[in-house]
Length: 369
Image 1 (tube, rainbow, N blue to C red):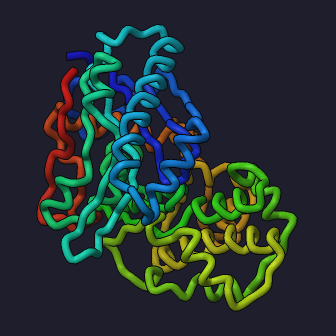
Image 2: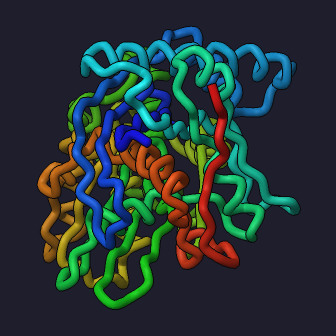
């Protein structure tokens, strides 16, 4: 079996499809040193992005729309894979497997019967690329009583843990999540709350583009303390881990409810949402004495957000995961390449202390070509 894997991640921010081509060691080791061979970001076609956004919220004819979008998404994944292979000059038969997260359209860990659902026809992806696909990683964890999220901490442990340093790995995508790598202690991790999702949605509502590049629009506004207090009053921030959330909860409707008692300039809302993400992370980590905080995901490039985080964590060394050898953009996609590798090597992909599952299990299901 080849030691080359492709990882595909399309997150709640809906900014596009992230792909990586990774070489893993074949032997099971305590600490892997994956070699990133190539990476690619493929923006979603605008119509598909809008349809995925629509599916993430309740609406009419959801089942019909989901069936159509799932096929389009699989074809978009397949096209992105072909672009990556062409760019890297690698043939499909050289790839052991694609690890694909799929696109989350519902994540309900607190429902009477908890469930999570990621779409993308993985059989079509396998058929189009002629590469076997490992996917559907979250539901087995839920079957064992877990929340199905976050799943990246097991990968963070495998490549980022350091024996004599308390490290936190903070991923700021549409939703933000953190992994706590404390020496001689079980790995912990959870979703801290909104990452870029609310900021991106608000920016798009102002017809300014898809996201606030470098936080420039936020920098033009002022912080509204009363609005910040209202945003932080949500009970989610008082929950202890294991905990997870998604854009089904923190979305435009949620924000509209928070805005209804005030009149704020749009740029001021953007500035406050940026601080809100940073402040919610601070609340989640208030009692953690970390030595280092490494940031990945799109939020790592928002200068206002990073400045806010440094102000809130003055005693912690704040830096991007690129200083650990993995670019901020590539960490999540690499995590799903690793989950496919872990499936093949029979390595558990979840951590019970993180998800709340009854035991550690090998995650994923195989879709053959």
